[in-house]
Amino acid sequence: MSKQIVLLCSLDTKPKEAEYLRDCIDALGATSIVINIGYGRPAKAKRTISAAEVAAAASSDIVDVRSMKDTGAASTIMMQGAIICVQKLLQEGRCDGIVSFGGASNTTLATGVMKTVPAGIPKLVVSSAAGIPAYAASYFGSRDITIMHSVVDMSGLNKLTRVFLKQGAGAICGMANASSVPVSPDASQRLVAVSSFRFSETCSQAVMRELEDRGYAVIPFHAQGVGENAMENLIAQRLFVGIVDVVPAGLSEQLLGGNRAARPERLEAAGQVGIPQVISTSGFDMISCGPLERRDSGDRLWSERQLAKRAYTVPDRFRVEVRTTADEVAEIGRLVARKLNMARGPVRVVVPTLGWSSLSIHDADLYDPESDSAFIPALRENLAPGIQVDEVKRALNTKSFGRLLARHLDEMIQEHGEKGPAE
Image (cartoon, rainbow, N blue to C red; front, side):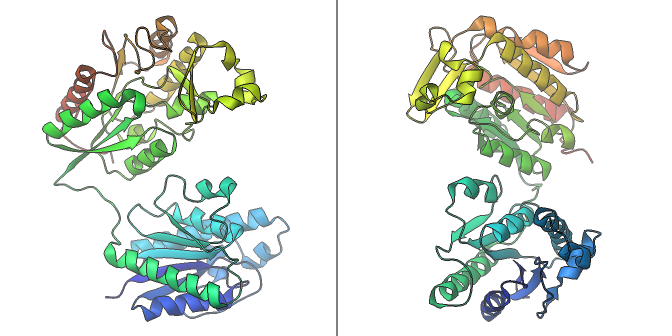
């Protein structure tokens, strides 16, 4: 059976370009299914889910959508409808890949739809806006969306746009032929997620080795915000039987305004699906606020939190790590408690008392045990009964501490019968 490629496009503004891309996809042996996300004048094309059907999926009428003066609201309706249409195609086994093209508006709408498609289903946007620094990261964020920079405006059919559209067809068909299966739990492998960054590397590596020795397949995630969001996405997809969250600091970075901020829902996915989770504290000892030039430029974060008056270290020209205060650490503890209280599965918090990273051990630049000590009381005061909290007289970034975290997770998984995510 040929691969089925969903084409998100605005037939009201780019009908010829959409037809050309559809024909290129068909010529490669795949079958295209067009979803018209344009809400301008009516348009028709073969194998098309019309704009009226898209609006209706979002419980709206296309006539009303077309009359809206607020284009943002109209786009949101069409995005919501397209999401529902794509999910239906996925359930029917009729989406082996999804592709779109255009400028900033169409790319924003299309990638909003693509972000709801499971990891492993190929997703491609041919976009003239791919190179805009302020937009680019928001288009794909923590999702497996491929962006192809068209360089020229994808308007009209000419020598260049034909080349890029044809290449886009080849790319999405090639990806679909290589693999078009959603990433899903594998009974033959017990997948475990582990968060890590440079200042906890020794610990995280020890966690991974210990878990691998115990028969788990370990998937590491870089705790720099985007990596943590990706981890949360995949946890929500029910891929993992457990997590060792060595570096949950995307949460504190989001709270305090640091560079490595994850989304506000950080530290919630594992609890929602009910898998065992072991949580530690690496990264709560610092705010990432580089480059250093921000210190002298009136930067809001630096001025509001008076970062220049604190201890800090500069690992490289892009990164500056400033020490968190006792008040901030206590605030983090309260937030962690609120997040973990929502968990449907087992949780264990393990707090090392001799430093939370390689930067905050004795004699290191961010060493401040008094500030660290504010975490446990704030956590305990707000934590629900039944959630275990251990204080361990070790430094976090050590092999022994990493092995301890891994053993705890293994015990929790064994105790709960490897049930996996709660239904």
